[in-house]
Amino acid sequence: MTDCDVLVAGAGAAGLAAALAAARDGRTVVLAEARETFRQGSNTVMSTSMIPAAGSRWQQAAGIEDSPGRFLADIRAKTHDRADPVVAAALTAVAPELVGWLADECGVPLDLVTDFRYPGHSALRCHSVPDRSGASLHRALLDAATGRDDLHLMVPARLVDVHLDSAGTVRAAELERPDGTREVLETPTVVLATNGFAADPELVRRHLPEIAHGVYHGGEASRGDALRLAERLGLDTGYLDAYQGHGSLAVPDAILLTWAVVMHGGFLADSAGLRFGDETVGYSEYAVPVLARPGGQAWAIYDRRVHDACLAFKDYLDVVAAGAVRWADDVDALATVLGAPVGTLTATLAAAEAAATGAAPDALGRTGWGAPLRPPYAAVRVTGALFHTQGGLRVDRHARVLRDGAPVPGLYAAGGAAVGISGHGAGGYLAGNGLLSALGLGYLAGRHATG
Image (tube, rainbow, N blue to C red):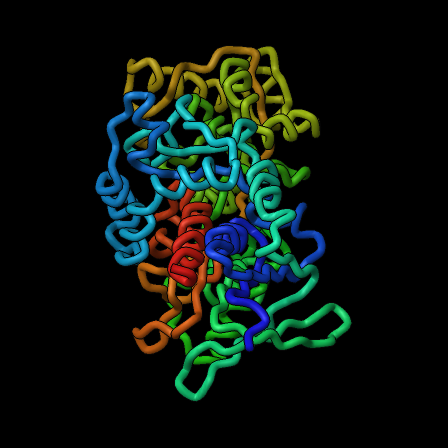
């Protein structure tokens, strides 16, 4: 006799999607979460809630032509055709269904982000909650899971082992409470949604040495539990060098300064007042260049127009409330804020204006500018950060975990516990890849496990 039909480990976006998708047709689901602080400190909560989906009803209503095939082509282009082909095809195909299910079945108030396109996306396809806050998305998913007779939340309870029978099929999950006591639940299905390993410095140094000296800005539970389980059970892993970085974490406040600042026309300069690259290549790959500047920091520079456009982001409102935005009436005052030579900063602003107006090409290759900046100028000190890892357990198109290339019966993985769709390194990350892997693989796992 089993204790539950499905045991889901982890109550972030991946775990909640898996639990909600599995809790149907009389099935009983246990959702075990290791940390009592998960409502405030998970990677989902710290995200901007962007969920890319091509061919959604929101796009159709807006007259935007897009398709899963086009989205897949964008992923292949951004990753130089190095993304996991099976997972990338599965997630781009299921994404329109996923966002519809989130809205209709889970009550998540989604809308299409149409004010700008994130780097690498060839169409407006990011869906988000109104305040573009991961906390709001997570709260909506938790609300959908609350009060159901078929879904039981166990907190705090950390998955420490999965028991297989002699045929290699899942038969039980072993959970541990903070006091060290353990409980074994008999179940035929386990979904690993325990996140990645970005909070484990040793694993980061081993697999992601280029970002190991950056600030970690993510959930404290991302300790590599899935990788340790993979080692015990001989599970397949891949893409362990893949991660999402970010080039604009406000310091010293450790609040995300949205990359919309850049996409609306802002740029990054170092303490000498010099730009050091094409910022529009993407925020993930820009973390390492920022860390390479003197002091591992830079300044995001923009104007009142960009400021107003970014007020839709809850994170940006938090940056403003923290007093991290420094205003300057002219270039002399801006140079004082940065501690940069006036002449150098004047030349940087002039070159940016020439590129933005089309008067001259940008020496660093940037082509998208929005509009030229006008005083007063805003400046925020930023650093490069590691947000979350994008590699993990290899899975098939149903999110089933693989061992020696074959599915382990009853074992699934989603989100940071599984391989993502970002290829290798930081450069293949497209906005929303993390949440799509979490929600999409969770949804696929829950549906398949109880289908």
